[in-house]
Image (tube, rainbow, N blue to C red; front, side, top):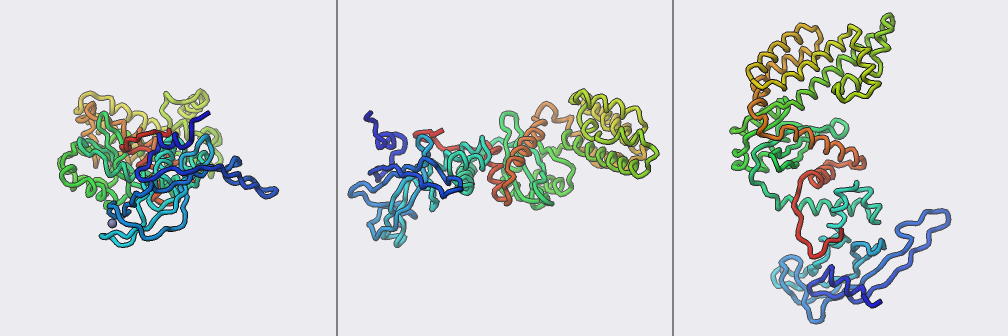
Length: 433
Ligand SMILES: [Zn+2]
């Protein structure tokens, strides 16, 4: 057995101007009686670094060589674990007297800024954080949540500074509720072959979306041909101002979401009314626990839900009439001819207005107000990946569900860019995972 740790390290992580001097195994500290072991029960590996002889340090500010000034106390930098054992680089940085910048700490090519992490470990953590939650990542690789956050933040910074923003002609605008009364505005690119999250900002006001267009710039905004959005007035206003050449489409997914919301409102209200007046006992029982079989598409129902739906349909309830209206509207999207689709929609709105069900009347009014933008859907169908907004939105919701520990908008933004931004990564001499 003659392969040395030094040889391995020089193969995977050669450091310009520095050498690996020595390494040692540190035994684990025995936990106090009755307490769980903290960190690794197997101890850790410490690798001592020193500068190459007669090699001058480089100023961390301007990266030029400069004469030494003094030396700071030793610092530890966590490296990629070797055989599952937490591993650290140890080095006492020099301070240099840079002719241009004054006294400065030297540049450490392996370090992630001032953090106790090596770059390799940070990229390693960031890669895993795409697959696991941040909590799982920190636990698996025996580091802190904060270290995982900083690593992902670094990767996002790096990637967003190098994003290719050419060819963005279709975007989708969406909002998501993420915690008590707080929304995020999301902008996706939805071109065939390139679907990714482009921008996240807080709230869902005009200024939230305006930030996106300011980030993208005037020239690129002018190249946008399609914008998919919902009927949220502040968004419509901003889109009309900043994406003047674009066709604004109110898409199927957002309209379906609105219909489901209206139906849910009718159902909840009717359930309450029936519970209050106990005489219509049969209908009350039927309506209980009916939420999912009404909101799901019929083809997605389980057997039990299908039976429940059949029972429901036999009662003359407002909920049922609203459900039938909702289901009927699906036909709208099947029309080949936009003219016939428009006729169908007019007809549908008439029956909804006559239904005496307020939430459905509201939908009809909304459809009438936004008719031109809805009809745009027929113009772009086939040209644009219209299902993309829904797909990305579902992925995003799954990521948010996994991140229950996130309290700040900053952390959630970083996580979303990381998972859905399709960001570029640097070329490595060695990939640790
Ligand atoms: Zn300098």
